[in-house]
Length: 246
Image 1 (tube, rainbow, N blue to C red):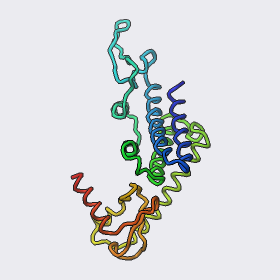
Image 2: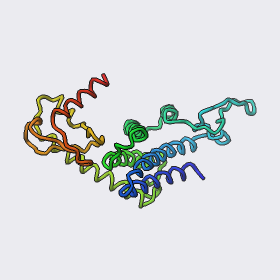
Image 3: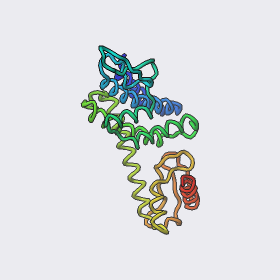
Image 4: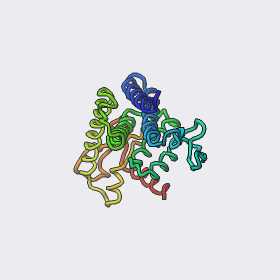
């Protein structure tokens, strides 16, 4: 089975898991694993295609060895281990292959989080992961594989991913519009509020109960898990994260 077929199968299984998670939340975990694995396999497919003939797919192998053939030095892959995420990044950079690593790193962080804190998984956070994945996958297929994403992924998978992305972006825009209507003490707090996450499930779909009022005079809720919290909780959490990273 080809790397590309494995990639497409993994993405399709991830979307199937997403749909089945409506009745079994454990499916969110396998959804995340499968979609992320599918993205990496897409990347490896591209590296495999760029590998010289008779090089044992040198560009996807962790171990690369020199060999003399007909008096010329050539590099070949050795063993079965393939490159990890950082290895793919390094080879893409060396080959001037561009993709949205910022978005992919966010998907990877979510995947790591769900492995360790799977009890906090929610439909909203997985929606964002699928939305980000859709953009990375569709753009990579179009820009580097020179294929039509709808045709390569299949209409069913493509349409489901596109719908999830559209729904998520619509919900996110609704939340941001309400938060922007509030009056804040300063611009720093105003900007920080646009990046708040639910203190319970981690979703970014946070909105205020009221609009066009002072930020400290309203309450906040998560559209994913319905968790409610007050201004002081949000500000404390935002600044704890800010100074933890500095």
